[in-house]
Length: 153
Image (cartoon, rainbow, N blue to C red):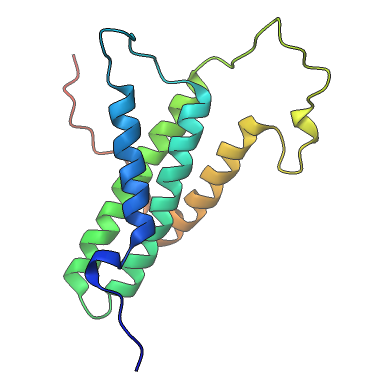
C-alpha cells in the first residue's frame, strides 16, 4: 500500500509559484525609499512565461475534469480562455515597450542572434505562438474575442 500525500503537501510547486508571485507583488509595492518602477521587457517576458505555464495547466485540468464533471470543466475552459486573453495582452504590452539598449554596454562579445532559440525578443513570440496553437484548437474565434468592460469615451 502506498502512502498518499497529505493535502498540505499535495501541490508544493504550485504553492511555491504562488508564493513567488505574492513576494514579487509585494516587492513592486512603492515605498518611501524607492519610487515605483515601470514594467520592462524582461519583466513582461517572465510574466508571460508564467501565464503560458498556467495556460497549459488549466488546459490539462479542463480536459481531465470535463468528462466526470461537465459543468466544472466548462468553467475551467472559460478560465483558460480568459487567461489566454490576459497572456495575449501581456505579449502585446511587451512589444509596445522600447527595446532596452544602452550605448555604453560592450556588445561585441554577446551575440544573442546566434542563440539556438533565436534572439531573446523572439522567445516570447515562440512561446506565445505555441500557447496560441493549443488555445485555438479548443476555442472558437468568438470565444477568443476580448470581452471589453471599459466604457468608451
